[in-house]
Length: 176
Image (cartoon, rainbow, N blue to C red; front, side, top):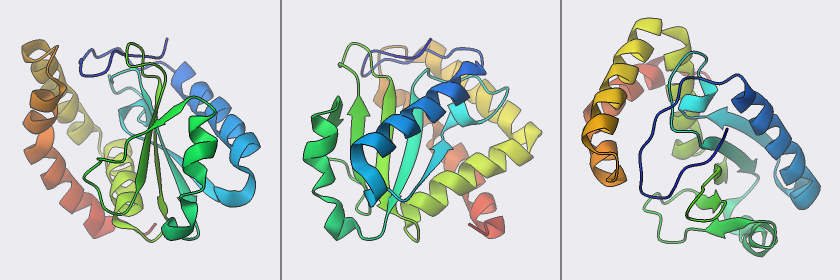
């Protein structure tokens, strides 16, 4: 199952169906956006086998130029995505799919050379290649989810020190 109410935190055991959901969403996005979205990556915890995660599929879609990608906003909105223009990440366009009561996908659109792309892919790869780090991350996420089931901001803030430390290690090794 995929989906979670906006602002809440609920972790689920890793589900191999998450990969199939990602692949199905990529096919759907390709049919909607054509070649404007050049490539995709499955990122976030649902992309790491064995890692418990919020059941929301995170995707990165790359474009040649973020400046030229704003025409995708209307296209994606007409196909179930909500554009989140107040996002504080400067090098991406961010979208959520599904009603606020059941978010199913998060989509970041960015350039392949962007910090967003490098950081999301490097962090995913780091967790995939370092089972001890993934286990530590999962334990932290479980503690935070138990403490903050209705406060996504507190949950996210509680992960930040681990994420920053792991991301620095990941970026040192990232070849993208």
